Image 1 (cartoon, rainbow, N blue to C red):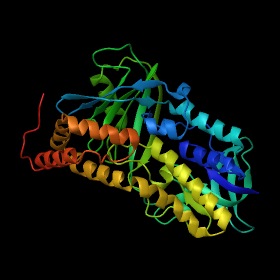
Image 2 (tube, rainbow, N blue to C red):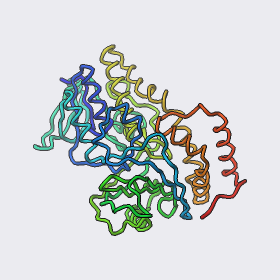
Image 3 (cartoon, rainbow, N blue to C red):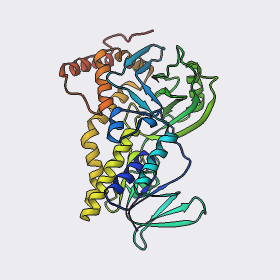
Length: 391
């Protein structure tokens, strides 16, 4: 009998499991083996500090972000006072699962099937080795099983209708540094020919690199778009190591618990940042607040404490998500808007405040006049009162 069964062993589920066992609870971590999520792999300094990530997990340290417009204009934004770490999800996720197991979680490899409440509460899963159905008796369940979460679909209102972007990337052998590729620079490509409603990316991973894109538009050939992106970046001839695709949720669910015995975390709850698509940090925070809510519920016996997960997350990150969602809606709708967005990135105030917010996960309030200037420039671009800079 477990206090909590965590379904899904990505960063969100692994952190939830680790936090709970470190607070004295019995936890089973149920995960399918072998799945690697497509992901650019960027993690900010706050994640590294908050979750004690060792330097051995950082495969590259990025000091520049390059924004590329539909016309090919490039804006390089230096990352001041630190760096953005890059991880390879193949190894990073396994590191987090191992850390949770070392802390005391019981790791189980299998496929989640359903929750059975006919004789107490139990998670039913299919054992990877035997193929047999097995039971995990438990008090609570944390659903951390991704954007198309089976737990969310059957247990939480709205869990079956969450909107998402389909992301696809290819992990390639990284070339030596060239004019087109820099192992310390992330390239973000805002071009409707690559993605009509999101963006493409080239992110360094040390000896490897992630090249990919995402879109919500049906009918877009993701592999062809990524091939075009590789060609434009001079990466066509690089050896392809693996190819991966998966949905990325676009909006946090209005509710994360079923009012009984289930709470969601990570992609299952929809916590991926709009505009940037950043998910690792928010998934891990989602796992932490889900663990906090579960621990509170176990202590008090009040199922209403499961609501703490969403309220704690939104208290700190709601405003950032709101701003990013507005930016995506304003600028990702056409190449003309994308051109103006990259043009806006020339502004030093935009660069500094954007990366201060990204690195620390908080909107910067220390320079109010900078915010006023950015707001006016943003309005001028949206109203086409100023021309977009071109190549």
